[in-house]
Length: 305
Image (cartoon, rainbow, N blue to C red; front, side, top):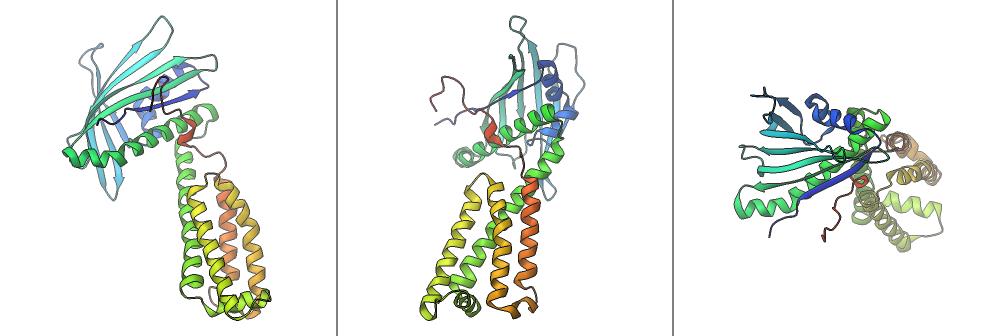
């Protein structure tokens, strides 16, 4: 069964000429489009000839995919819209994409411009390639949508793509770090090890003793693991960061009250939780108004999927 085409649409409060300039200039295009690290236009054979170009996408650790492309821009004088058709591909086996076609369209609106793209591609590696595309195609759609929102914010708010991506990646790293911390501390010290110090602190802060205290520590461990999962699933990370800005001081004070000597231990809860508290504040500031793929429309009118 053929996979559906990738469609992304976003409204931008700017003229068609401005959106066209920011997307058709290769030096500007490569700054906001997550799918390309560099784009180089080749000399045209004639004024009416398609614009050929070479592109590179860096995958990390020195690995990159290089490919070719051809684009043709047209102007619809009836409604003022513009369209740029694209034919692209790569010979590198590391890329699941062999060749594809699509277009960008710029439609004038009262608020500015509707900028949209529709494209599809063929995969290599036969049946195995089609299986990989089940996971790769949504990733391409997400990267396209995120890039479109970065472009929109660049044009409308003036925030450079580099700063936007730094904030976006920093937020992702902070998310994964807090997921790991809550998951680890819920699973190992509390559920697996049932560490005596954890049990002792709970007993000191409450009237729970003995076996009940051990069970209480396990329950707290389960709650921490659930909170770790929430870090992965809940989209509004600033809410979680704000909660942690309150929780970490409370946890620290509670730990010191339960066992005052713990404050003198190496790598103790006071310094550890203080670090997480500061990191929560930094994350809260960075996570304000992040670019997101969810700001884009992903289906066309009349599509049933």
